[in-house]
Amino acid sequence: DPDTDAGATGESLRTPIVAVLGHVDHGKTTLLDKIRGSAVSEGEAGAITQHIGATAVPLETVSNMAGSLVDPTDFDLPGLLFIDTPGHHSFSTLRARGGALADIAVLVVDVNDGFQPQTVEAIDILRRTGTPFIVAANKVDTTPGWNAQEGSPIKQTYEAQSDRARSMLDENLYEVIGNLSDEGFSADLYWRVQNFQKNIGVVPLSAITGEGIPDLLAVLMGLSQRYMKEEMAVDISGPGKGTVLEVKEEKGFGATLDVVLYDGTVREGDTVVVGGTNEPIVTEVRALLQPRPNAEIRTEKRFDKVDSVAAAAGVKIAAPDLDEAMAGAPVRVVRGRERDAVVEEVRKELAQIEVDTEEEGVVVKADTLGSLEAMANALKEAEIPILRAEVGDIAPRDVAVASTAGEDVHRVILGFNVDVLDRAERELDETGVKLFRDDVIYQLVEEYDEYVEEQKRAQQETVLDKIVRPCRFQILPDHTFRQNDPAVVGVEVLSGTLKNNQRVVKWEDGKPKRVGELSGIQDQGEDVSESRAGNRVSVAIDGPTVGRQIEEGDELWIELPEKHAKVLEQELSDDIPADELEALQGYLDKHRKRDPFWGK
Ligand code: GDP
Image (cartoon, rainbow, N blue to C red; front, side, top):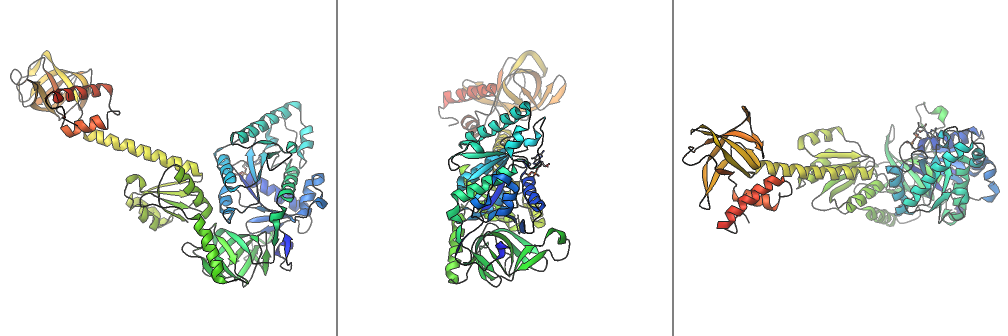
């Protein structure tokens, strides 16, 4: 097994690391399964090697699977290492020295579905990390009338289709090329691409029938050989460097690390430094574990111990004190160097990912350092301040921190791809801290934005509820039903909304004079709490006597406290109906004739 051979010394070419990304259901898992499956069915011993979190496909197998498309003598790279956890969450975890750990990526797009939210998000990550990628235009077999040619190169299968099927597929493929161009990438069908550094190659394929998979492998191999050979030249026997893919409890081992090693070798007994929640963790490798071949997966022992592992590889590291290790954090073997220098190196790398936090803001939790970084970028763009940002599931402590935020809209936790611990669930209920969770970053940000808008609206509504609202109304002639105690008269609401339990004023000699308080409104015999402009209703007014303080034909107003008039005019004038604004203006005008600064 070349990947666990630590005997090599000096420079050698390591395996390029390939990641698969794309929108949910576009076929990432199926594609990886197909590559693994057909590699296995090639039947040779050691055709593929199952790693922790990755599958290694050696050159010979790539060449067998790709048939005439790959001549193994053209290559000196050892093969391809596919990261098994599909999706860009793992991809953003896969960081190394501030960039992407994957050397190359396959962006899977369903040809029928085109670009979807996670496709765009994946493209953003690829762009940001400068990762070269190709597009797998998947599910070509779903084209109506498709005549499947299991496992064959795309050109061959293309020629076997009817004109109609071919032109339908073409249409879909051009759509995908158009999508890429909308995102600022010039792209074409891969066989037309001369320079893969300038243009994105699109490979039509089917993860189910295997059509086009030979092409995908050939392009991946060719690209790596042509453009990445220098980066692949590493000292495989040197001290190992890797990235934590996942922190996992394993029976008998405690917390373990699933690591992708991209440089050097890690050996049992090595001292390693790992990025932790607080400080870099310095520990010693107790065991290096690889999955057992499939047939034995049900047995108690799920892993085989190995003495050493060389890049590129996926491996599980068992060591003490790993509880605080973070997904996405760097792992460094100390061997032959100053321990403190390595600790410093890890610390520096972590500092690059540190998120700017402020005194006031939201709490952010993400599954990995990489996704935390991506979240922080997205929030910065949306101008949403962050109070605290950490990797890990949502714990009671996070709720406690969120509940200290000053503003209601910041008493919030945004969780990206994380779970909520049971006790935290209870705390959420008790504190009223609001939780938003999603596995698409921009959707999470959008949900939160919508919430903030909603809160703003609700707040304005409560202010409007608490504030006295202007209204002008008039007593109708011949509509006195009762003289006093209370006076009951018919009125027409002229502008604004008449509400019960408000004070009533009348203007006399340019001065407002309080005449009483509304104590009832009846609309056609039914008690109502309010009545809009244009309606005629009968009202009861406590205080006045008809014929003395008020007369039929009088124009009456709801009395507005000066402060309320001010808030209405200055802050809420956009939120009230036009007729109410008219009532407000009329009321202000009357006051301002006496006192130009009233309500200002
Ligand atoms: P993921 O969410 O991207 O990992 O998508 P999956 O690999 O789980 O695929 C989603 C669905 O699409 C599954 O039902 C697959 O069987 C189906 N699928 C994936 N690739 C193909 C393909 O090439 N052809 C067809 N017909 N179905 C496919």
